[in-house]
Image (cartoon, rainbow, N blue to C red; front, side, top):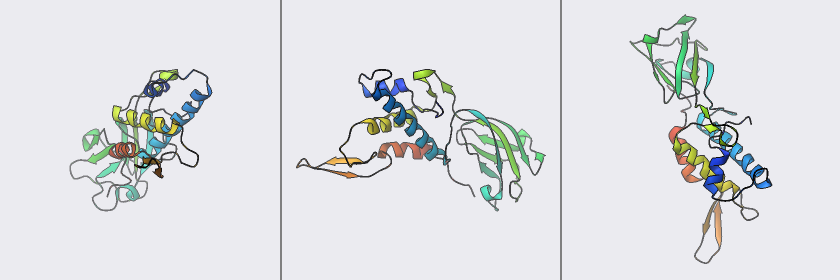
Length: 207
C-alpha cells in the first residue's frame, strides 16, 4: 500500500456498520475508495500532487519567490506538523537555533532579532522532520492525525462507497423534493468535509 491512509480499513468498516467480508469485491472496492480519498485529501490540504503526510525527514530549498522581497522574515514549509529542524542555512551560512522560531503545528519558521532571509532565488535550505506518525498495521494502519480529519475522511469514503443512481457523479449533493423527485449539485467534496480540510489547508505563499 503506497497511499498513506487517513483512516484505516477497520475504521471505515466500523463506520459503515455493515458486514463486509475480507477479500470480497466490496472490500476491494472500499480499499480503492479509501486510498483515493486519502490521497485526494492530502493533495488538497498540502497543495502538493502525490503528497504523503507520513512523518519523514525532508529537505526544501526556498527563496524570494516563496517568502517575497519585502519583510523576508517568515517562510512556510511544505509539510507540517514539524517535529524537528535539523538545519537551516541561508546562502550557505548556518543559522543558529536561537535565530529562529518554528511554529510546529503550521510549519512556519519566523526569524528573530530583525534578521531577514536573503533576497535571492533558492537561498534557503531547510532540513527537517514533519508529518504524522503511521500507527497500526494491516487493516488498522493509518496516520495518527486529528480526529476531525479522520472523521472527514470516513464521511467522504462512506458517501462515495454508497450506491447511487446512474448518471449521478461521485461527490454530488442530492436533494429530495417534496414531490419525491431529486436534484443534485455536482461537487468534488461533501460540504462538511471541505470545510474541515480548509481549516488545515496550507497557505500557498507568505509575503
